[in-house]
Amino acid sequence: MFFFDEKIVAALLYWMEDGSVDLAGFFQRSDMSKSVFAAGLVCFLGLSLLLFPFPAMARCPGVSFAPRTAPVSFGDDLDPAGLEQAARASLAWLERSGLRQLPFADRNLSTGQLRAGLELLLRLKGQYPGRAAFLAAVKKDFIFYRPVIAGAAAGLLVTGYYQPSYSAARERSACYRYPIYGLPRDLVVSADGSVGRRLGGEIVPYPTRAEIEAHGLPTAPVLAWMRDPLEAFIVHVQGSAVLRMRDGGEMDIGFAGRNGRPYRSIGAWLVKKGFMPLAAVSMPAIISFFRRHPAMIRKVLDYNESYIFFRRSGRGPRGSLGEPLVPGRSVALDRRCFPEAAPLFLSSRRPLVDDNGAMIGSIPMRRIVFHHDSGSAIRGPSRLDLFMGRGGEAAAMAGVMRQPGEIFVLLPRNIRIGEEIVAAPTAY
Image 1 (cartoon, rainbow, N blue to C red):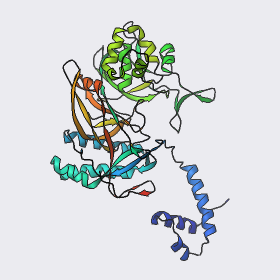
Image 2 (cartoon, rainbow, N blue to C red):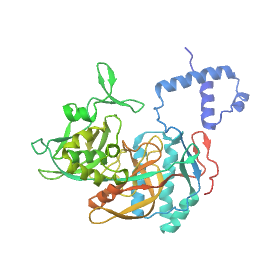
Image 3 (tube, rainbow, N blue to C red):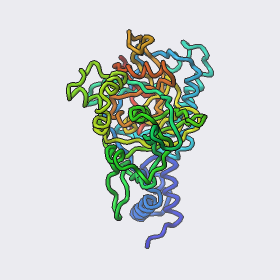
Image 4 (cartoon, helix red, strand yellow):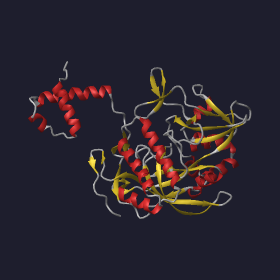
């Protein structure tokens, strides 16, 4: 067996502290041969990988990020207090995550770099209380990274979600018979993110939505029972809810996990089968369809194999990071493409709705947002779900929110990303 001696350790420390792969200076001052150092390095790296293996990091296929100067649309149309709250939620997650790196499309971003960007954003907010001065400082001190696919800017579809509130019961009854499940005991999440369950010494796919609905799930606790299968499905779609319990009080629930089966859009199914035109698809339209055709609810909902599990989340909605969601500031993105907790700039349009929840127009929406959540339907660099809040107005806006937009990751200037030094940004 090869053992390290003090010279090899010194060489390794020299390399790590210097940050350079050129060890010529070290060997000139040492009597160690390069072959001995190489043997020690191989053993050192092998032992490191055994003791501290790198986690598998999923990637965003075919996507990269191009550095740009701030777009002409850059601005912020929300209360600055929400920005500070959202930035601190990101910092809190980074502090407890224990991660060192996060996927950034085809490269890596260290959590230290991400933390530095969030702290800089908060520092600028404190130094420049006026909106115009703060935005000017952000434009000066940050680079805006836009997702690119095959050399062209990726498009973006912006949708909305909210925290619904429904009646529920702690015990099953003839009226309340649709379960909200907690995380199953037999759910297994592999290092690569795949989900299944252990059966006979091997990992097999987890049951589909149809199988869970038909046979139940004895390995999962039931957090509550609901009276309407459509309301239960909406809770799955939104990822959180406030349940008004029949015996008094409220229960906040949030996302805990999923069964790993593919998400399938029921809106796309309704369009494909000719039940509604593509232009008419929205959450209010889908709910209205099911109210008119209740016998189709189970068949259509089972088309989507994905199933969501929940946990009691205390007060207020929380995203997949476990941090509180901030209305208008928290967004759900694909974590393979966008670094979790990152600040971003979103440019799109916000719907205007009447008292009946019908869309009557839209206005520009330009703001700094934060990656606090994920979702089964949010896949790739061209999808973003904006958290609208809680209550009737939030539900109405989320139901009709379907707008084109642009998204940019905000990072401080002159930082390393992966192995590359960021070049000077190209102007618009």
